[in-house]
Image (cartoon, each protein chain N blue to C red):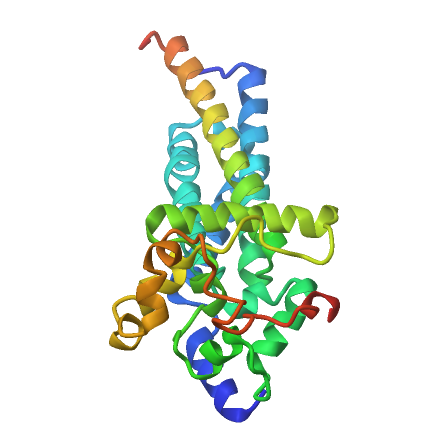
Length: 212
Length: 69
């Protein structure tokens, strides 16, 4: 990784976020309170003060720690580094960062046409439900990663052109292209893929999955 | 007020569940991988939910003993 990329990465990661620190403190306080009340002083369980403390821990502090961690985790799981934490993705991410690559995803990544979270941006449908669907698919991927999956890996369904169109459709360069005008309906319904044929180059190397 | 021994056991189980859940959350913060994320969200969430339910049982039993419910 070059020093510029490293600096950008460091600026984005920034270590543990403030919310994550809050979760850490909340969790440690909860664990300490539970241990003190239940193990060190069992009589406290029967006392009103102990009951109230446990009530606060079980009903407020622990759920708060869980929900805060959930929101942080959902946000952090969009990063390219997170995707790259599965070995099968190494080939794809290496190609993203390869300056000699001519693949579509690499061009988007290296030119920063997509500023951040490039994998997630191109592999999640539009809107809230698109995000949720992407997360559910992610869980399916993790399950497949640990239980076994077929190679070569491929998309579950045809790639949805609307993901490309949400950025490209409003641009003049896209709208003025004769082919886009001619095949507008097919492009918008994903009947004709943006990739392949005589249109755009492949997003990733065909055998990227082999590089683990 | 005398707590039945089984309610104390429930509190103990709820406490253990809660501690395990919080440990999964801490694990996912310090070692953020797809597996730890899913464990913290699924197992952690389920255990926190279970500890809440168990403590509700304890509270309801306590209130019934006191004649509030």
